[in-house]
Length: 232
Image (cartoon, rainbow, N blue to C red; front, top):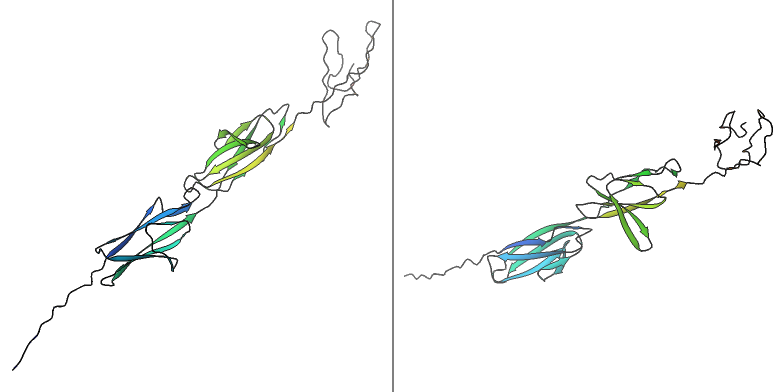
């Protein structure tokens, strides 16, 4: 004699598929200070979720705003079958500020009425601008690495990385030496006889060391070297 019995084994090993999307980028930088991660599960309607950040439980909310770099893992657990799936994403950070430099400018003088400011960066593709600052007001006065200036003062060189939008600024001072010498032609005197000569005296003139002399006349006659302190 024998008897039989049958049992049906259901396959409940259905595994949902987890995935992660991000907005607006997967890199935090000087313009993007927060990223929103959104987790989704396909293949099951009974999934519990949890987020891990750098190996630690982060939240069970969805979507998730984050403002720190690191590895984020989205875990989806089917509450009927207890099968799970994970998805992960690496959030990077780029806060590299472009290094800037300015060549030492020349000095404005009575001969040199303008100087060119030359700025640069060791980073490629940096966007350059020049500005002046007065109190709380900043005025852009030029674009590009070079700027021609005609006035002394402090000038600011701005550099922005178009990739991570980080901006740096340095300043340079343009000096001017516009002090005029003081010319003194000496005391007046008279010449009474035709053909008589006399010495002019510019020794009372003052100025920076190395200044030169140049004598001129509109109705007289200079008979000697006009570039000395005492011509005739």
